[in-house]
Length: 109
Length: 117
Image (spheres, rainbow over the protein chains, first blue to last red):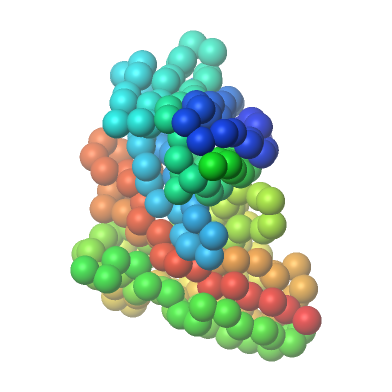
């Protein structure tokens, strides 16, 4: 079946460094790719999204890139801060909504 | 707006008991969804609804039932609780459906943690 692979499952970085999380999807019909941040004990919150007609999108310290040919999309966080520590989920939406398995990001002061 | 609210926050059930997880949204969204999230895993869609009176199965519907009598409410029913249903349940809503042009952004509730013993 269709799936979304997400790597790495855990990521530890020093405050101020960059973090990159990568996802690969299999459904060619996918055309919308949101990223969610989930803090402990809370529901996922949308942080950025990208559509299939766009290659890159940036919002302050967060950026997402999309390579439709390779079916890859990535989340980039620059100048990480301790409050960026959370679990991040990618998702691919076409006829179905499929979530990745999540990346636990820890930012150490 | 309160957004998406869920009750209860936490519940312990015995095997074979039944319960209803409540979900309400005040954003006038037409689409609503129920997900379960197992430890270390992503979200899996249980059921969804495209509007009042219309529901459909998601990826993992067995053991669950839903109803959508109003735009605001989308309760999830467990009839005979099993240990495999121990999970965190999230309700979400969106204005447009997945794949349609427009806002597919889903807004999630805070979750209900369910433990079946």
